[in-house]
Amino acid sequence: MRKLGIGLLFLFILGSQACLYIPLSEKKVLAGKPIADAEFSFIKTGVTTKADVIRHLGNPTVFWVDERIFTYSWKMRKGVFIICSFQDCDGGDVGKKYILLVQFNRDNRVTRFEKTVRRLFVSYGDHLTDWVGQGEKRPSLPASNKEDPFHQKAVVLIRISGEVGGKPYPVFSRSMFSDYNVSLSLSGFDSGGEGTRMLWNRFPSDETRKQGWTYFLLKPGTHYLAVHSRSEDGSVGRKGYWRINVPVDTKLVYAGTIHHLGRIKKFWFGGTRFAPYKRFTRNEEDLAHKITASHFPDLGSPLTVLMRPYRGTFIFKNPAKHKKSE
Image (tube, rainbow, N blue to C red; front, side):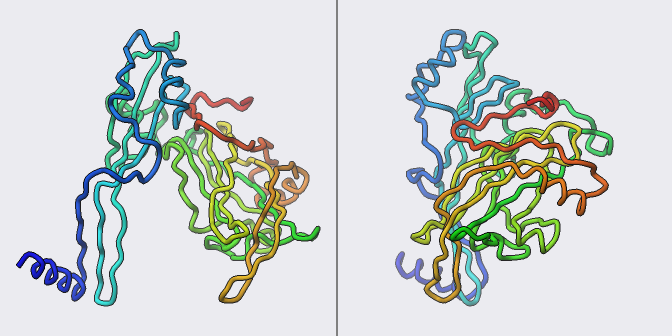
């Protein structure tokens, strides 16, 4: 009877629009490296140092400089969902997001630590600020104040260029949506280093798109850019991070160029793709000034703050304390 009931339920789901959630034990790791309670039992407030924590647990996921907080993040599968329509079914994993938070004093000794669970629809940044201030947000002017420099976004211009056999290659083959050749994702304080893949790209014009120029609208602070591209075997993966600093009270920033050397590969079903095998950054400040003068004339000359290749812990500072000189 039990098998019959399951079968009837499955037929019911197939025959109508429905969503089914199946809870599971937390055995599958979806992201990060899990830390068991016993693994951080060595931590003693007022005694354990920052060096002790790194020695036992490794480098943290995020270091929030202003509040001297380490975070270690991971996600476990707690269930799966199935969504069915009249024609087919689809589904996926449902994750539970854990964050181990460790705070230090000015002498680099632990003052507080806790294993937490980030709630659904609560950003990484809000989770951290809530933990620090028990719901008290970071000091800032009201969001409605148009003169607030910490809410004003800057236009951040970059170039993603390509080269095949010594000749320029247009990396962005599409005018708007995520590309076959490369796609971009950005991580900031609110995401805690969890990159948000950009479904569409912004270009000053169609002509500059062909040249690889694209731009973001970013708040002051530190951001991490990831470039995702296809390897020669066709697999898609992240090819490193670049750290972008956006100073306070800046309207226009040129953050540099990421140049790709690559080869042309054919799809099995027709068409071609760009497969980069080497990439490096360079400064094309003079070209950036021409682009911005033509397409962003009201914003003045861009401030050049070159992005840097980056690996390791995501380091963030409060935007209110982020200076132009950094």
